[in-house]
Image (cartoon, rainbow over all chains, first blue to last red; front, side, top):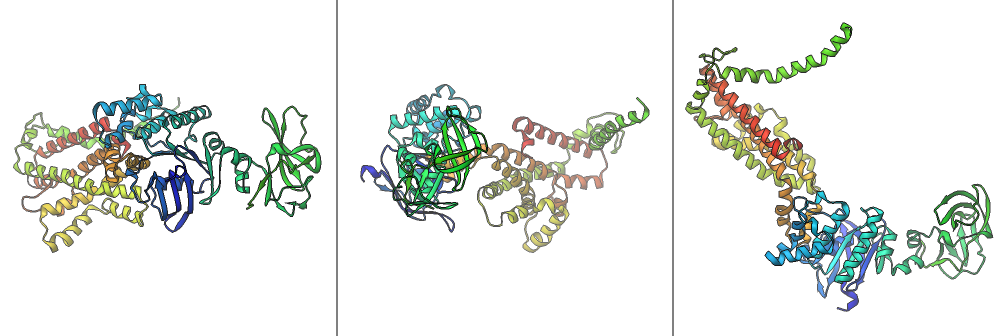
Length: 341
Length: 264
């Protein structure tokens, strides 16, 4: 086992009955990494996570963890923790008993048990809530109990299913910080599943973008955000203007269009709204929609190329609906895409 | 206020009064009759005495049939739960092929008239297979209570998230262990409610038990009918009143401590 493949999925194929959800997945995760599985619903990210936990039987391929093949090890003997999206706290047990649940099954008793439970609760800031029932806690508190309940087991891998999606904006930031802190302090390998690119970008060391059961791109948050390899990833991380490239020209609604400068060789080009220059350029469009977002203003343009989204500084003069504007899609700013679908 | 609106405003209260009188009236008459000092079952009661209530406890056959009814109600309901809890679990947690058919079959004893169930059991089970009456009664009561057990337990299982079982497994529990550690404690209220409902249903059951009676083997309600055919004194009223108060007491306690009405 090398350090880069602490958790290793090898040719993993997962299926529900005869429907293959994930075909032939290969993925290596290093010890202590914080990985995000990112993708729209139905992309296989949750299926993959459940297979790592052992909750879903593997059709073919292998799951290796810390040097051992755990493909057929039952979920209660894997040392893999999972924080459920719904938290899945035991409603009949107090916060204390929830955290003690797994430790008791490990055979811990008395002072040793108490010490571990207390320190688990303290680490998530819930030591004064030990006697409450889960129903008496807020969503954020419930999630921290779920986190403590998994972490006291000292898992080799901690899986988190949409950890921030049920929280409001303020709690999200708090929980994000909390997860990063726990990860830093314990060095546990974490994999979380999310459909929210902002969440993945903010939290992960490495992001695995999935589409239809396959890995579309693996990279750092900067890679994914700035250098998407495919039109799918580009679209997913907010490139709103995406066109295929043919012989150095853009394939658009009006046919092949020449760009103002020589484009790189690629299967397609993608521009974020902010990368579109408004006011000058070879293309013309009519303002069909506009929205003000504090620092910036976004325009939706009707153009011969198709719909174009452009974003400019809010301090720039506003254009009314129906105004005709010149614009440019500067080739040097565009993200080159190696696959276009 | 003219007479028209007066009539209209009295209409609802009068209907309500009649409905309540219709529901509770017979019970009140029986309670009153059981305190009668006279020798025959009559209303209004003649005088006041507790002698018929005292007599209930001295009738030998009442004691035997009360024991039988109690055995059937407790044993039958327990057996129905032993069968019904796993059945409910399977129906609520797994996408079984033909789940709807299973549900319908399980509920059949509620829908099919008791007379027919009793006759069918007698004709096709008891007679051809020479099954003892006590065993036949036990099987019949188990089958009759099963629909209630499945319905009430299913209702509380449906309210319980299934991912807590997966959470328990990932914390080191076996699948079976997870059922007993996190499912059972959370459906305890439903199980107790099913038990009470089953107990009362079984205890008050007449039509099926009517067919399945033998020498010395009778349930209490059937025995009361038999007693009334021979003796027409107020002791049957006294016994009825006692049983009614017992049922009310059980249901009241269940509602008080379990929130019984949530499950039924």
